[in-house]
Image (cartoon, rainbow, N blue to C red; front, top):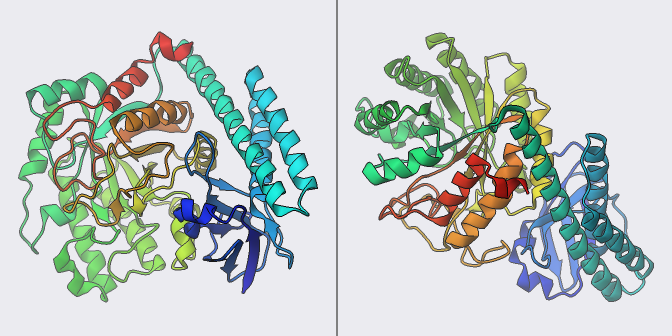
Length: 500
């Protein structure tokens, strides 16, 4: 078993940053190692099966940014412990330096404020490296370097986003990525319809097996039929699914009796996929056939079972209608869940196997549930989001992105127990309606600036009881619009204020 050791100064960081226990190590290819974190005083030990070099990814306090996940550079194992703050500063500076070089080659005009901050961070980091004989002093200097470099990164990604979107807008006078929203289990009424259609050009109808066939052989399509008619009446692009959800609790309860009979289970799954697509033949042209197959958790399905099942559902859907667009959903696309040691393939490797199988995958849907635990996405800055999208784009298939961010921090007893909002937020401020809008204004334009991203969906429109993502709606359960809805409308129209 391999182990990497890090000195944490001051030790109080552990108390102030509980997410530190979810740190993990990754290899050169991005694959996450099963990682066990042990902290004894100021010493942090990260244990994993392998002994090769790796990067540490850990939530860390950054002034003005909360506790985002940041990374070290690739480090070899050694007996002497690393000073954690110094290695995080090294990793952050290297990451930003490499990115600015790549973007400058693409024609980015780098803001002067960035260069000044970047130089300051370098200077502080050099002092920290020279002071490593005194870990407390080195950590203090390195923390200052991290804070400054994160501000530099913020300036850099802001410049990239504005310049990229302005270029796209000037070329066609519209943004290439459409914006849609999920309906969850509601149908907007008169006022909500106006609010929806003022912002969104597409709607996702949640055609979910566990709700449609809660008892074997007893189907209830009434809600979905109404939602599809509503989309048609409002002339919205209609997306269907996910038909098969392979997360815990995503499949009908009655199906559990077949959990050890993979052949019969596959037969039931394919039958439902065929039934749903035939029912809306010609009315829904884009389907999310399966989701969360990469992380799994449904029944006792192995990774190989989930791969086979996903490929088979795509084949069946293509046989029903060879002109529809078929997507699969990928949750936790950084692969944080691999740290628990139950997965052999990274999310990227899992999807790459699907793409290479030649089953007719049209696009991917990357799901980001920011601010939720335990199956959500830990907060990261825009540079890390940008680099993740760039990596996924190398698969050569278009990308859709589904986003969920809470507007308050409170438990929803009727919601998904795997998607809860912690009382203490690692975001830069407690979750609220203004904080949700601020996140939208910061991250959605960046995602729209990416060439591979052809569409963005907000996960849920309304805060109805029992929603999958608690408090993620853009209107309250009373139909009152939140600030985040106005933020999305401003982005969709790309008005002059965004271009300056």
